[in-house]
Length: 249
Image (cartoon, rainbow, N blue to C red; front, side, top):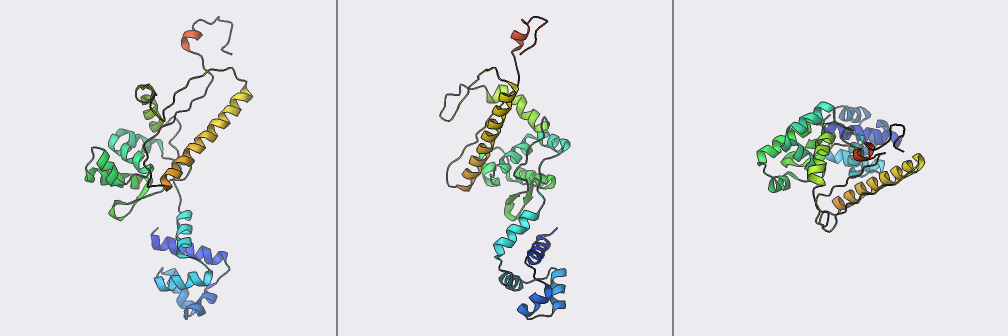
């Protein structure tokens, strides 16, 4: 659907919500009702006409654009095959991760060993996948929902999980802003659920801080990763010492 058609569709919804008909709009524009219907059906509204209709409806053009964007379907996840395609191309995966974190193409090319042509080719592939909409001058509009996530145990998760031990955890965690703790406790099922809920709230706060930093674009930022893991677990060395008639609780 073209942006013009999307904008007209959004205008129709806004007018319907306000109870405004073509017959009521026509005198305001100095046109016949048939002429107004024709302009709507052909999506041939001029900017002057659009502005006049918005004034009648008490709308700002910005409100109409936001309504148009809100009505567009947003991607919540990719398929297994699509994630596999990303993992198969490290450069494509790099551009995908950077773009989802709102990096412009110029910054990606400046920071990494990609040519501008390779960057544009990657953006075109991401557009085809539905992750982004590639705009003129290589600008990008994300097309993912706020709750977009990689598939649980999908190709992307497996890719990063395979690198957690060797890449992520292979550090002393002494630098400012770094933290590593491992603690063990005996929890009841109810206590484990309560802790899980608190961890999920922490992840939500992590996402909110990310959004706040994007809004304050003048501040320096750096890629920051957070690893949370919670499960009933006992080291295999301990399990090997257990008596056959006992469980791990």
